[in-house]
Image (cartoon, rainbow, N blue to C red; front, side, top):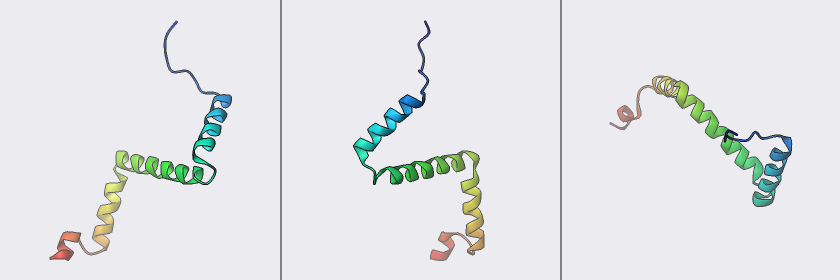
Length: 71
């Protein structure tokens, strides 16, 4: 019998969510989900290179890099 990662079904996910609710409480769950979403978004942007393109476009629009502004 091969050893692998077992699949997660609906009952398992419900159990995990209940445990998280007990540990963190109802007020922290939305904050944790929001931070997790932002982390995934940043990861996707860094992998695809969109974050670098956006930052270079913003520096061009603002009139140059920050180093040029300081001097």
